[in-house]
Length: 158
Ligand SMILES: CC(C)(COP(=O)(O)OP(=O)(O)OC[C@H]1O[C@@H](n2cnc3c(N)ncnc32)[C@H](O)[C@@H]1OP(=O)(O)O)[C@@H](O)C(=O)NCCC(=O)NCCS
Image (cartoon, rainbow, N blue to C red; front, side, top):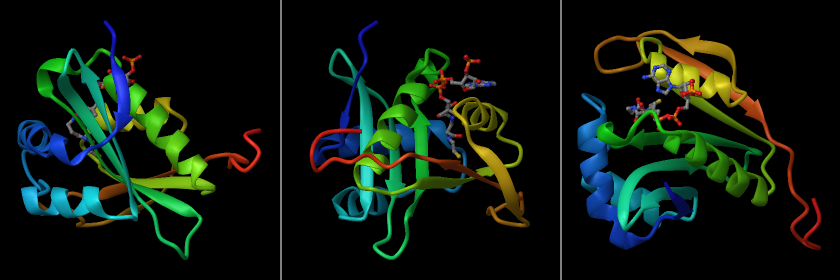
């Protein structure tokens, strides 16, 4: 298996919409939202690709006034799960967040999303809070955070 993880391109939009619709049963991002997000300078987004097929994507949002990025969405095509794609996407998106000089990433996850919770805990995220009644069906969100060491990109040294 040779999976390439690269920055997202406008041409990936159709694949993103398809993944979003297949991977989530509710609270999906619309095509319009995905398009707006991937154009935004505040977004950091990447896709995992194998033999020209997009297997999954990850999207983080940044704010000029904050040193903390937010993992806004990550999803893998259902038939492609369980082979490390999300792990690769997490690695790449964290690297890109570090390259912007940010010091941490936060995220929210449905309290009943065991696969995502395991993914985040395995990749070093620690739970620090929760939001009650956060999702459309009233499910609570667990809040996670991971500290990321900023890179010194000016002279190419870490
Ligand atoms: C959560 C999701 C992104 C994981 O993608 P994936 O490519 O299958 O994940 P990986 O293969 O990289 O697995 C990494 C780790 O995540 C955990 N994990 C992934 N799928 C899991 C599952 N079905 N059950 C339990 N743990 C799981 C495991 O700890 C796994 O490591 P391991 O295989 O060494 O035990 C994918 O299931 C998905 O797209 N789900 C729907 C969308 C979603 O819920 N996104 C998160 C919103 S917050």
